[in-house]
Image (cartoon, one colour):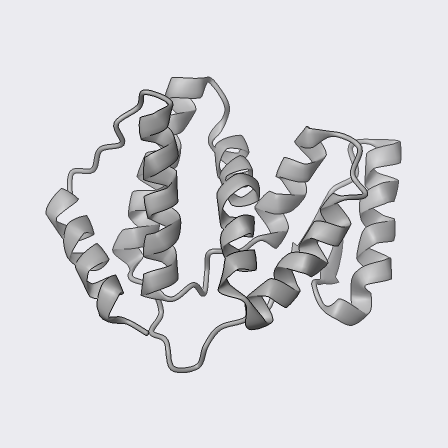
Length: 165
C-alpha cells in the first residue's frame, strides 16, 4: 500500500498514484489527511459519529450497497458540496479534492477516493450536524426514514450545534 499525505504540495504525486491505481486496478492507496479546522470550534461529539454509522448501515440495507460505498458516496454527494459552501480553507480543500476526482474515469473510483480524502473526523459539531441533516433529507426524499435509538440525544446535539459558531 502507498500512503501519501494529502497536502497541496503533494497533489501531483497523489494524482499520479490514483491514476496508476485506476489503470492497473487493485492497487491500494492510503491518503492521510490533516483536516482543516477552525481552532475555536469544538470537536464534534462521539454521538454524532455513532449516529452517522447507524444511518450508513440503514441506508446500506435500503440500497444494497456496502457501508463503505454508502459512506464514500455520501461524502462525495453531500459533504464535498458542504465543504465548498463553507468557503475559506474548507473551499480550498474541496477544490483540491475535486481536481483529483475530475481525473477519475468511473464513479466507483470517485466514491473510493472520496471515502479516503473527504474527512468527517475533525468537523465542528455544527458542521457535522449540517452533514447529518443532509443525509437525513436525502434518505427521506428516497423513502427511507433514518432512525436512532438515541433520537433525543441527536436532537439535543442539533440544538447545540445551532449555538456553536
